[in-house]
Amino acid sequence: MKASTAITVPPKYDPEKDKNGFMNPVMLEYFRQKLIAWRTELLKESEHTIQQTLQGTELQKPDMADRASAETDHALELRTRDRERKLISKINSALESIDLGEYGYCEETGEPISVARLKARPIATLSLEAQERHERLERTKRDE
Image (cartoon, rainbow, N blue to C red):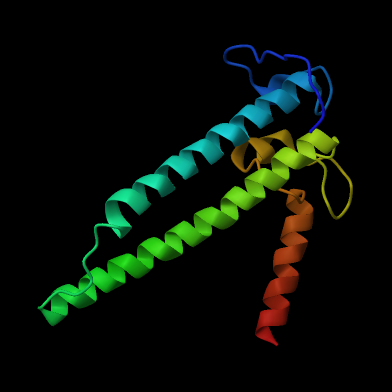
C-alpha cells in the first residue's frame, strides 16, 4: 500500500461531474471510501449472521417439517455468506488496484471504464462493452 496524503472528498461529490480528469486523486479517494464502506457493511452483516443466526440455529428439531425448514434456512444463509465472502474478495482486489494505479481501467482493453458504471458497480473490472462480449461468449459456450 503506497503512502498517501490526506485527500478530502467534498460533500455531495459526484465523480461523473468531475472535470479534473479520469481517476484523479479525489475520484480515486471517492471510490476507495465507497469500497471500504461497502466492505465494512458486509463484514458487519456477516458477523451478525454468525452470532445471531448460525450459532443460535438448532437443526435437531423433533418435528421433521421444522427441521427441514431450519436446515433450508441454514443452507441459504451459508450460500449468502459465501457470495458475500467472494464479494469482499473482489472489493479487496479493487482497493489493491487503486493502490497500484490500475483502478477504473478495463482488464481486457485497458480503456477507462465509465464512471457511471463504476458508481453503480465499483468492483467492475471490465468496460460495459467488454462485459457484454464476455457474457455473449459465456452464453455461446453454455448453449453448445
